[in-house]
Length: 212
Image (cartoon, rainbow, N blue to C red; front, side, top):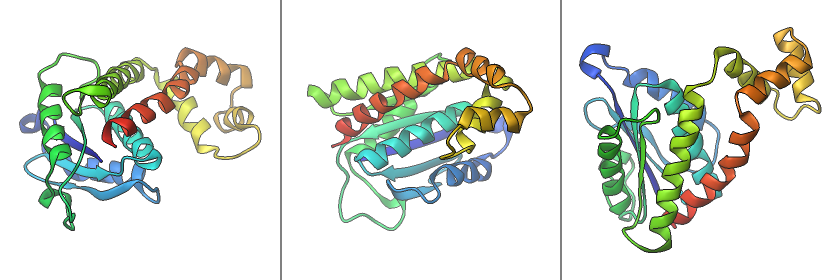
């Protein structure tokens, strides 16, 4: 299983942003498979959720991590491994190794100076441990990449992803933004969007295999 524990940065000076982040997380997870126990406040300015360790759960967990890193102001801990069953109705009442590791991960994220304050903790040894370490490295890379994107780059990416299954998404994006297709292509190249899209499936696979 996969657990995300998320803690707010500088809560004493920024106020309680948990209601806002719960809205954000709800918009990312709504209607999607893979979440077992939804995000809720656990203690203080911390929220937590449980995801399945399959393709759907790992993909959703990666999307959530990257959304949090883009939003900024959060330490993100990811723990993988078994959980105690039967599961309770709410995340804050759940227990097991994945929950302990997520707690360790968020504390490790706090101890690092990085453009992407995320850590992944999995089993201590073996292939699963290597997968967790590799997933962390790639999530930090993607988070650092996203932190350096311009507003114009994000505008193009957000518009492109909003096009859904249209036959010519870049053309539709250009029309929505009132720019040329060449301008959209340039924004996406500068934002390294194709590179992120290529890396995401690898992160998903590593996270899934770490949590199995």
